[in-house]
Structures are given as C-alpha cells and as structure tokens.
Amino acid sequence: MSRRLILATLVAILLFPSLMAVPALAGVGEVFDSIYVPERQAPAFVRVITDNVQAWYARWYILSNAKKSIDTTYFIVEDDVFGKAFVGLLLKKAKEGVPIRLMIDARGTKMLARAFLGQDYLQELMQQKGVTIKVYNPIHNALLNLPRDLREPIASNHDKLIICDDEWVITGGRNISSHYFADWKDQPKAYRDTDILMKGTQVTLQARKAFEDEFAYLSNTDIHKDWINFKSRDAELELNRRAMEQYMMGQGLADASGMPSDSSLLEGINEELSKFPAIQGYTGYMPYRGERPYPTFLLDKTSLVAEKNEITPNLIRFIDAAEKKIVIQNPYVVLTDLAKAALVRASGRGVPIYLLTNSPDSTDSLLTQALFVKDWKTTLKDIPTLRVFAYKGPAKIHAKVMVIDDEITVIGTYNMDPMSEQINGEDVAVVRASAFGVQNRLRIENDAKNSVEYKIKLGADGTPEQVVGPSDHVQPAALEAVQRVQMLSFLKPII
Image 1 (cartoon, helix red, strand yellow):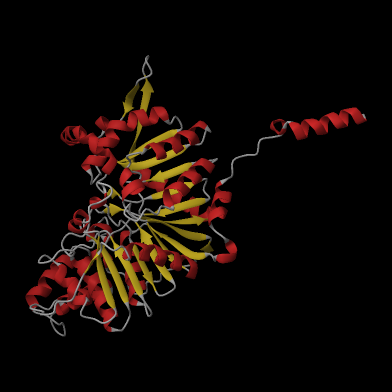
Image 2: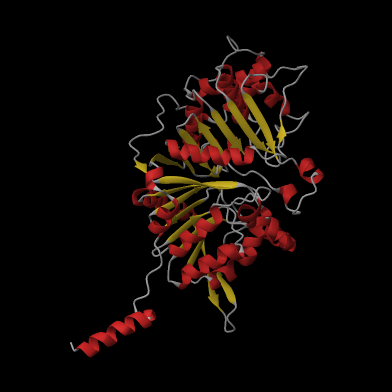
C-alpha cells in the first residue's frame, strides 16, 4: 500500500468516525453490571416460589427462625386465619425478645389498620417491648397535609417484604391472606403468584433500606398500645398461631386441651383451617434444596410522596437492551406511554415479546381489565412481535415476572400500569443467571397452556380487527360487564 493511500485512510478514520462500525447497544448483561457492583456485592442464594403452600411455608420458616430482627411490610394483611396466625407468630417472636417493625397499607389492609375494626390485634402486638407498627399514608393524613399532587392521598406502599436478621428476604406478589396461600385443589380461584426467597447479606441490606425509606415517611400513622386493654387479643392470636402450626405439621385440628382460649373460638379457627387440607406438609420443610447463589440485587421505588424510583428506568434499560426474547407475566396490564414506547422499540429491533395476563374470566380488577380489553387490538398492531395470552381461570394470575433474553429475571410487586409506574411504592428483585431465567420462562409458558392467544388482522384501512379475542371464550354477561366499565377510561392515570 502506498504512503499516500495509508495517509488518506488515517485521515478518513480521524475526520469521519461515522465511517467506523457503529457499536452495538449494551446487552442485558452490561445493563445488569452497571447496577450490580461485584466488589461491593456478593451473590445471593435464590429460590423462585410459585406454589402457594410453599410460599406460606417459606414465610413461616424465616419468621420462626429469626433471632435478631424482623422487618416486614405488606399491602394486605387479611383478618383471616392466615393473617391472624401471621400476627400471632410476630407476637411470639416479640415475646422472645426479637425487635419487630411492621408496616401495613391504609388502603390495602382495611380491617387491621382501622380503630374499632381490627386494629386492636396490632395493639396487642404493641404491648411487647421492641415493637413498632405503622400504617402507611392514611388518607385523612394525606388530605390534611394539602398534597402537592392530587394522587398523593391514594398513594400506597405496595411492597411485600419480610426481612429477617441480616440473612433472609422474601418478596413477590403475595399478600398475607388465604387467597395467596391456599392450594388450588382447596380453593380453585386462589391466585397464581410468584415469590422469590433470597439469602444473602447485601440483598438483605438493600431490602432493609427499601423498607426504611417508606417506614420513615412522616405522614405514616403509628399504632399505639391500648393504655386500658378492655379486651386482650393475646390469647386469640396465640390460639391462631398454635392451631395453624399444629395443622401445618400434619397433627390435625387442635383440641381445647392446653390451648389458651375458649372452645367456641377454637371451633371457628378449626372450621377455617379445615378448608385447606393441602397445607399439612410443613414437617421437614427446608427453604433450599440444592439452589445455587446468583448475582442478585433489589430495586426499590417509593410512592410518589417520596419520589424515589429505581425500578422504572432500569426496566426500560433492560427492555432496550433485549436481543432475543422478552417474556412477561403480569396481572394488570394498562400500558403507560413510557412502557409501550420501550416495547415498540424492542419490537422494531425484531425482539419477540410474550405477554401472559388475565382475561375477564380470571381478573380480580374489572376496571383494569376493561382498559386492557379496550386496548389489546391496538397494542398488538403497534407492537408487531407481541403475542398476548389471556388466562382462562378459574385461578387468577397475580405474578409480576419478567424474563429478558433468558439471562435476566425480575420478580416483585411491580404491575404494568400507571399505579406501579407513577404512584405506589414497589420493589423487585433482579437475578442474572441463565438457568434461573430459563426456569422462570418455562414456568410462564406452562401457565400459558391454560390461556387463549388473542390475535388480530388488519383491515383494508389498517384498522386492527379481532381474529381471536375475549368474545371467543368469555361468557357474554361477563364481557358486557367489562365493556360497561370502559366508560371510566378517564381514570386510567390512577389505575
């Protein structure tokens, strides 16, 4: 090659960098590594829990074995036998001297959060030293504080976290209620949900920081102990705990001998427990059976009253980095402009997108489903590589899971709607491991076998028309109810 040609080539490279190859977008692994710093973090042992009964066992196990501290927050703690046994177990641990911080949401937990309804159960827990209980953002407080944003009074803490000692964390879609822990043989309409159990110091610290960011919110209401305890709930909570534990151990329903309460109360507890025979296998339960540690971190989003959001921008980054496939299982799909734009970009790169969600047959949110039914055809048109699978029931999808390129798995509380993106507090765990990703993708695809794939064709004017959709599997009365609710579409920003 002549000197002149060499010189011309060098000048071209220096003056015209656009002639060089354009670097590829960062892959999902690079996005993960930009958040997860190996020298400051260590892998965590992780287990995905899709079975309802196993999810209850996991909570019982880490709470029962806590020695140093328990921090827990839930959107819903029901006043059924599971909720009262949960509070009863916290009461037992408090009596053992374990410091406990508990937070419940004012909108999700209606009975236990309110005076003269069920708050006296929490006040019983407050009789113990080292216990702090808060109700998140009660609406009367939010209204009195003249909110900067009219959405602030409805802002909830949607986190579901249990953090024990400096070791254990569990999060995911499940609240504390029989609807989330009953086996589908015992309760066919119970939720199909997903949790992640994590064991590791760094992820525990991240979870505790997420907990404290919401726990410290100044407009939360403290639960105080009764100065005059007209009716002690101690014996009732202990009875629920002991009856639950005995039944879980396979020792049958409890009898009144040795139990700290009257027989009529025990009869009610036993009647409720007897509806859940599948939970009687706790003996010998082990939280891990050969699971491996994987790089894992927790992302947090506070409600808009605190304005911290690690989740939304990072999920968008993962979607923008996807190269092979995006698989999503989510119960409430009301795509925001931000989420839809990211999926449109991924589709434009040719990335297949697979969405499993509820149908009118399986939803527990009529308004959310109304907006989904209204939009699904346009969504399929705008995102050509998208396939939509609508669950047929009778169980209800409640899992919030995303698997990207079989390498990144996101499991947590975050729904694909404006409430999660913009209003509520949420948390998600992010795991980088191909084996774990494939496991979760295959599980979602297996769930999709009990679904209907919605399909469209484009009319001559480009309008999307149904080929297969809700009317092909939903009873007319149920579909009409969903369509009637569509008149409330103006509420989309707060759904």
